[in-house]
Structures are given as structure tokens and as C-alpha cells.
Length: 588
Picture 1: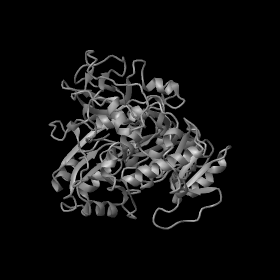
Picture 2: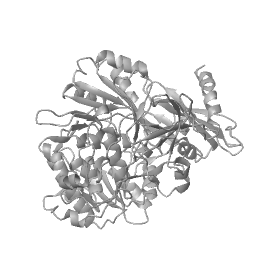
Picture 3: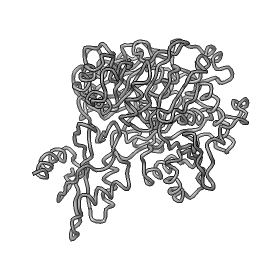
Picture 4: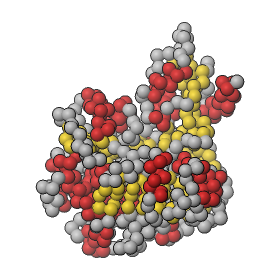
């Protein structure tokens, strides 16, 4: 699910890093994973040479070259025009780190971010990590129950929230037995909103009188290999959302892997050149965080944010910026390829497009190239891999491929029945090993063991094959996840909500292809005996009140029984086979 950029030199020594970061670095253990040290038959290493992985924290990696372009804009709101320069980004994130430590937050404690894409997001992201704390970010569309679940699971009792989302946080505050500290960004468009009692303004945490000179002595000591920096939530290959434990080493390694010259997509900023990155992919998601935010800031790019995809605002950004690099999901590619408002002139400043999150149709790519001939690359990854695993090259003759595994990474294909390692062009489950692979799922050792085997291989749940040259192809999904506009929708979560409906006793949810969204959730439901069958809209509304918009049920199909195997697992393949027939009946 990704693309890539240029960023890191190879062979950096600790002395060089120390010179770059002055007093930032402490002696640390290297965790390099040489992809050329393994020669097991049918285990493929990267076609690109190994790189020396960063030996620093993620903020250190981002800030290391920033003095070279301190006066240039780092991030700008595409709606309000509010912006921060790189100098301001560094200063405000360090001030925030100092303030968080003064609040008494301890190592391993988690701070929650609940805000859309906006200039304050990287300030918070980098400031939290700079303090040696753990960050978890919540989808801005989440409802109360989903917020409570993630904050409880991550043991977070400190949240930084956008003013427009404050109401739901005040509602969920009563769900927590312990006190919930709330910080609110209330001056995002030049207007300052009044806050209720007990809620502190974000501006207090980055004010001018905060002395950052003592931060290095105050902040928590960070073990880059073991300290959890980022805790995004993923359903993995199946089941309910789980916290994915990503260390600083996981994150910095993957940034370095994305930035080798062979797959370079972002040009480093100079006095006369600065790339513009459209920040439309949500920053709470690992794709938006690592691929769009961190990697772009590392190279000194200007990121123009959109709180959500808005066609008019999106086109406006395309038309009014230079040297544009876009990272997108297939629905955005479809919009650009088919919408009449997007013309060749609209795209004349678009230099590169990367697509990830879900497979992108070749027809849409070809239509986009007709409007603007430029580089388009697909890549593949998952949250559990920080996230990039494979990356294609612009001139590859294999357009259906997701490319080669990135540097310092291995890939193999295993038979889903026997676990045997398969040879070239044999279809099985894709498995990867590399320094970007997560530490595990938070407090879920069994789920971790199901995903990462005893030899350290990450089992993706995706079916595919590798050709003789190590080029990877995805052919199907073993996992149950539904992908709606690139977002993960775990069927088990929707089934649990449906079973709460007073008239229903069972439910099964599967994805159904959709040209605009990729997939949409379709629910098969069983009505309780002796109960009047509820209306379809009533069930949809029941679910809609409890989940984010992209998770909402598109179709309801009433059935007498949900097909299951002997162990009680839903036979989703059978449900998918029934969908076309049932939907045709409804149309007739």
C-alpha cells in the first residue's frame, strides 16, 4: 500500500549522527537486518542493496536536516491557509514535549490525538514522540463507543482534540473511571473558541515562555528498539481492532527503506526547489503518517492538508501549487481519472502519483495517464509493517505487480494448508521479514503469535506469488477485512453491533465490490423467533449510530441462518456467493 521517496544516505556512523543531532543521541543498539544474509531456497531478498538503518528516534530523523530549510513552509492548511515553517514546527513540537512532561506523563504512557489533517497534527505527533511517550491516533469519524474502546485498550487518559470534535469527547469522559485530561485546539482558523471548564487550550502548551533548552535532560530516555512510539489500530488479518506496537526503529527503518534513490519520488528541498505534497490521506492512518507526513517532512517538502476529501478544494490545490507529489487511494485515482473538473491543465503541475491502501484498477490508471502523462507507482504494505513491504518502479513492464520487497527485507510464499514454502509463480500466503515489522499487538500475545511466527515471519493474510526475479503479485485476500475507500472494516466489529439489535439474533457481514468505494459492507441478518421483522433502514440507522460513516452497512439481506463451519466460523465465501442473487431479487 504505498510509494516512495529519497531520504537517507547509506553507511551513517554513530559519530555522524551524533554530529547531526548534537546532544540528542545516546549510545544505542543497532538492529540492522541484512537481506543478503539469508539464502534459503525460495526466500527472496530485495533487488536493492541493503542500507544502514537510522540509529535515532523518529523526531531526530525528521529534524536532522530541517535547519537547511528552516524558513520554508512545512505544513499549510488547504482550507484556512494557516501554516507553520520548519523552524516553527521544530520549536512548537519541543515546547509541546516540555509541557507534556510537566503534566506528569511517564514513559510508556499513551497520548491520544483526535483531529483531522491540519498543521497542528505534526506538531503533536512529533512533540509526543520527542517527549518519549507513545502516540495513538483516533479516526476523526469515530463515534463515542469506538473512541472509548481504543482509549481503554491503549490505557490512554490524555487526549488532544480538535474543537469541532470536542463534544463527543466530553460525552465519553463519563465512561472513564479515572480523570481524562483534555487539550483542545480551539484557534485553528484565526478565531478563538471559548472552552468549557476543565479543558485546556492547546496554545498553552506551546506558548513563548516555555524553555526548551532543558528538554534533553527532562525527556524520558528512549530505547529506539523497544520503546513504542506509535500505536495505530489495525484488525490485522481478522477480528477486532488491535493496537499495533511500532518502535522508533520500526518507523525510522521503513522511512529509510522508502527513500533509497532507486524508488525516489520526493526531491530534497533546496533554495530554489520545494515539492508540494497533498495531505489528503488521513494522518491517523499509518499510510498518511509515514508515507505522507514523516517522509515528506524529512525531505523538507511543503505539505498542504485537507481535513477530508473535498473535490473542489482538492482541485484548487492541484491548480495552485507547483511540483506536486500525490499519495492517494484508488477512489481518488478514480476521481482524477473520470471527473470532468479534473482536466489536463488541472494536472499540469502533478509530477508523481503513488497509489496504495488497496489495488488500483489498470483502467483508472490508464485514463489518468491520458489526462497527464506522469509517473504512477503502486506499492504494498500493512500497518503491522510500518507500513511499506514492497515497491514498484515507474518503468516496470509488470504493471500488475506491487513491485519488489524493499531493502533489508525478505519475502516468501507459503502454502495456506501445509505451511510449506513455495517456489516462483506458485500462489500462497505472502510472508515478510524485516526491521519494519511490528513488535506485536498490544497485550495480545495470541494474536501476535498468529501473525508473526516463531521465526519472525509476518503472515499478511494476502494471497499472491513471486516471480523468478522476486517481483511480487497480489491475487486475492485470505483475510476477512473489507476495504472501503482504503479503510479497514472488520466484519466481526459490525457483526457484534448487529447482534446488539433487539430484533436480531445473528449476523454475518461480507464485502461487496463497489466502483466508487472499492467494497461496501453487506449484512446478512437473522431475526429472532416471534419478533416482527424490522425495516432495513431501522437496522442501518442502528448501526450508523455506533460506527464511523465508512463502516456503515450498505445492504441488509434477511436470512434464516448464517452458514458456519463445525467450529462456528462464518463461511463468508458462501455469503458472497449469495449476495448477487439476493440483490438481484431486491432489484426485481
